[in-house]
Amino acid sequence: MQALNWRVNHLKLHALLAGAIVFLLLWILSIPYRADYIPNREDIFHLADGLLLTPDAHWQNWFTHGYSDWYAPYPEWPVHLFGFARPAFQFVIYLAHFALGKNWGSYQIINCLAVAGLAAVTFKIAKTTLGLRVGPSVLAVGLVVLSPPVLESWLLGLAYAIEPIATLLVGCAFLAVIARRDFLCLMCLFAALLAKENAVWATGAAAITIMLRPKASEPLARQVFAATSMFLPAVMWLGLRYAFFGGVGETYATIGYAPLASFLILTVSKLVHIDALFASPEWSISPGWSAGAWALRDWARIGARLLFAALLCLWAIHSLIGMLNCVRKSIRDKTWPIMDETLLVAFWGAIALAFHFALPIAWPRYATSASMFVWPAIVKDIQKRRNAIAWASLAACSGIMMIRMGHFAVSWSNGEWWRPGNNSTVVALHEVPTTIRQIYFIPAEHSPLDVNPKYAKPILGISAEIVRIADIESRCDKASDLVAFHHSVADGVVSVTVNLPNCANFGFLGAHFDKGALANGQLYRNPSMSYELPDAYYRGPDDLYLGRKMIVHVHPNGPARFIIEHAKPDGITWFDISDELFRNLPQTSRMTSP
Image (cartoon, rainbow, N blue to C red; front, side, top):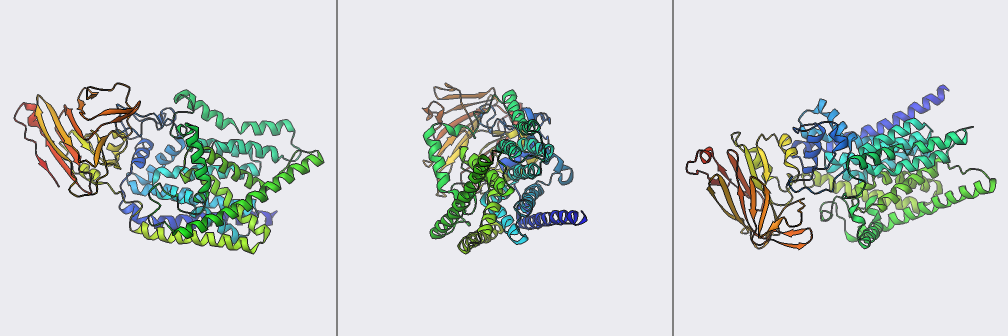
């Protein structure tokens, strides 16, 4: 008994050590990120909402309101694509603030801890469940941590820590159900679904695992009851969805099912680029970024794809044969099928991978769970077969991933991946005098402020009300392509006329308009703001083209600053409307280009 306890403690120590090493490496790598940190739009929302910093914030809103209005730069015209709740993640951020305060960059520790925990769980699955030696277990950990879904979830900022956190909880649920610690598994599943809804597949996997792993002398009725109880987290999640968000549809994760042809094309594309989920960087981060520091030569990408496809196919065939043999044996012996741990790891990996393909979303980070189960299973399959070619293929995949990591480390230290390309508006907001009560701004595209303004105020430390006038959608590449504007004041109303070059047009990011909102070139927003859009017209039922000319009429309720970005780096122009306007004196606004 003492020897057994020593071995268990030894395995726990190894898992903790693996997690600690991963955490230390990621924390060191994120030093330049934390030093020059500027919150992006996702981080702004999660920090403000998780720390309850907005005037109407309550912790109950984490369940009942969730993300409904976070992507609403124009609150009067909200788009309803983010109706989901992730209260467990908000709670983690809330707990972190007791130690981190308002040092926003340091919240990257949540990402580091989540990936480190994922590494520890992966090591335990590889060493304890699959019976791998220490060396292959460490290799499995390295493959998982370096895989695009996990690395992407770490480097994109605080908001994306939600993926490894949910996957960590799914891994804990798997380890618990394998040991038939059903209550612990159930609690992990509840936490996983409250962290991220794409963990819902794990409830079915846990239920099936219980049916395939009966306890000694366990009555069938108790086994069925335990398996059925695994669906309680899914029932809870559906209850929240229907009670507060009107069902499971109408979100960015579901609208992609229509039209069906588009969904099928996306599914085929994901299948062709399946290596992007495990090894190759081609689809990593986002469309358009793959040509940067992570891009490999075409032949290397093709080679990585073929190598991984071969490893994945061999693993899938061997796992399928093992499962069929298990079913055939149960039929022959007239007994209930019982799977061993190796087949169950493959089973969970297959379900996680199938669930990713069932989602109309291409982002690799949604396949983090698949990476956690599939890589250790592939290493186990190769070790079991003792095939030199398979080991060489795995070594080649590992080498490619390490080379990619080297490219990434260089580009990361230079700030290529995390330093915002358009932060001039944020800098200009920080320079606004405290006497200003309202800030009206027209940003260029890809602004860190592409979020509901009520969340940006407390994170950026701005006391003035922030109002977004419109967005500049620019395709300009010349320094001479500047925004032309002038303003006038009459009867307490500021009228700003803005003309864009031919390579740009106006837009309302994340806005949804009711039919007929535009009438005779006039667009009403609220009692203090309206627009004249002489070039605007409807290109479709919900597609409003705004054109290149805009006249906006604003009635400020105090001293105001108007900020206009020229759609080029640091091209900020601003002017102030002073108190003299409200004393019916001649307007003394001024304009400058810092």
